[in-house]
Length: 157
Image (tube, rainbow, N blue to C red; front, top):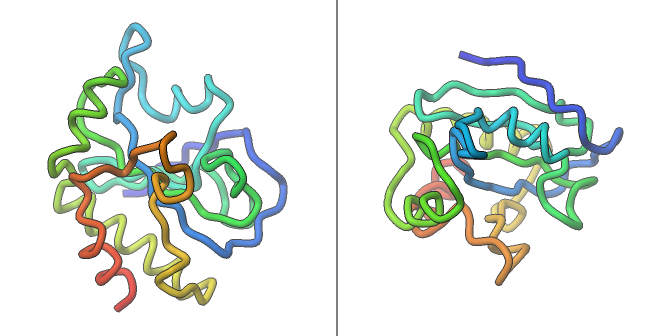
């Protein structure tokens, strides 16, 4: 299922040359649980797509527009967030992404989205990066629990 969940913050133009894979909590405790889309909106951040544990896709920004998801890369990249099931503060989120957290439905939906982007924008494997790759020391997502090489192998086939 695809949910239309527009996030207003982002650049007007985007020339996708990179895909950035992220993770964040499905619900953020701030202090009460709020869905990731509401939390991003409140912070003035965005991503192109969020994929929840049920495998539903939350379309937040069109590809041709930028999204505020990766400092320094917001005008030439597409951002996808894999939502970690449950309610999280930052510490519980960091613990969760150390272990496998992506559901089968979520994996398949995320592979589908990124595979389409790879074809649409003629991207090579080295143009698919983790948030931690472009912000080392500052960001750790999508984390050790995300099977990175398996993901790359699937989206490039």
